[in-house]
Amino acid sequence: MLNQLMLPPLSLYIHIPWCVQKCPYCDFNSHAQKGIIPEGDYIRHLLADLAADLQRYRQTVEERPLHSIFIGGGTPSLFSAQSIESLLKGIRAQIPFSEGIEITLEANPGTAEAERFQGYVEAGVNRISMGIQSFSEQKLKALGRIHNGAEAERAVGFAKVSGLRSFNLDLMHGLPDQTCEQALADLERAIELAPPHLSWYQLTIEPNTLFAYRPPRLPDEDQLWDIFEQGHRLLQNAGYEQYETSAYAKPGYQCAHNLNYWRFGDYLAIGCGAHGKLTFREGDILRYSKTKHPKGYLRGEYLYEEKKVAEKDRSFEFFMNRFRLLEPVAKSDFEKLTGLSSHEVAAQMKRAEALNYITTSDDSWQVTERGKLFLNELLELFLTDD
Image (cartoon, rainbow, N blue to C red; front, side, top):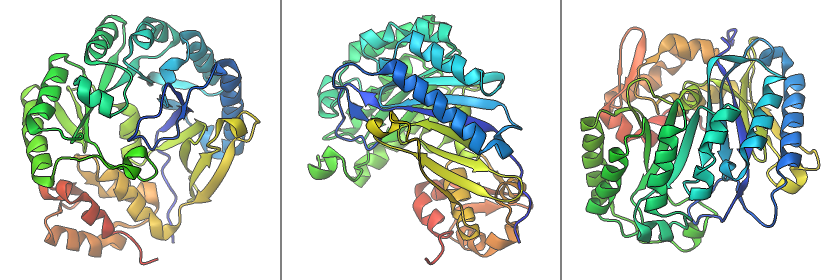
């Protein structure tokens, strides 16, 4: 018997699918720009999509203001500041914003987009996330990026003087033919720029990408471990705290939007291919997605699929998110957000503890250093047979 659920914070994810060109490692729903992007039309549809969601899910969303907004892509910074302002004003007219709401926009560090930062701040954006990936011209070319290292540094300069509350740099390691020295040089250059937040993650080859069809030569496991171990030490020494598998932040600058994801919070989702999750106090948890292709979406065909998260899948879904964070997992959070009793995962937790993946106290579970390294194996303990 499922218990009544606690309603977690509510966020909003907005997907803008266009980019200048598709990167060979990217498996996100993105489409290379061909001609003029229909900014105004797309924003009208985003606002209509949100209105439909607020009506469809009013039973649960009307009780909660927006905790955070994340505008991702694609390359959202292809849209003008005026378009982003129109979008945010249209959202606020439909649903209240919480005090201190975090509003993030993903941006390409190319000069043309970077110069718009001031306009985005005036539009209401208070956090920008820049896809730097590397400062090496050779590696950027291999990754299909359209900027260079100098443009990345210039973009950081714009971010620092724009009045943003915070900004993030995305940086990859384990790149094609990358040595440990090259990876650490990238990281040191990023640290010198002093971003409040750094997402530092390993390149992985995803299905249905160009790299999947033509795999590049990547560093081996020993090299990857050396990169992570030494890079982690560099970040710690520079005052960054790791709070999630691939996220580091200066104290007070963790990403509120991503924290809500990992804490099994709720999020509305609008735009091509966007995915949402909503909790209903009576016991249901719903996941849904939107039409992926712009042509269909711009015809007003918004909702693609929705399904309830089955009781048997809830523990896996909860821990798949929650164990990415390094903070302890309160047993009470598990119970209030899934409707399940912590006793229902006692056997899995006992096994995880025996493998030194977690430690257990009376009121929480904590992932160990070993558990972080074997996260997939830890999560497999919560998979059901079917």
